[in-house]
Length: 135
Image (cartoon, rainbow, N blue to C red):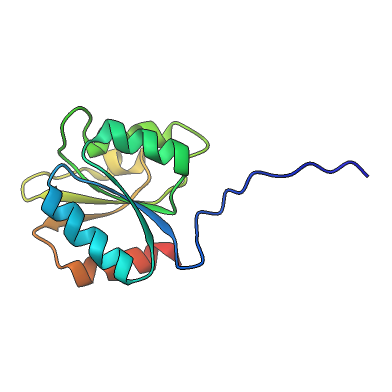
């Protein structure tokens, strides 16, 4: 019987899932990253949408937490690009936005965005939403 090894596309680890955080504010990445690490997840970080897109394509995280407005490429543009690629289209995304940035239902429907949270946000509430999206 001829068998071929299949690539491992499971992004959960022994400790938890791989989660990508994309935000141009270092303190937000630190805050969210620490909360997710304490919950047992492996965390990848990017400071702009372009770097986040590359990390997502390379690592295929279980979930992405991204800011809406970032340099080089916005979180929304990154979400659109990921949704156009079959390999990354199903990655759930939690979008963090400053008050005043509202996304329409039609815009969200074209992406993997599952939830939009306003900044400032509760890290505990964000972790609860992450856990909901992963299960």
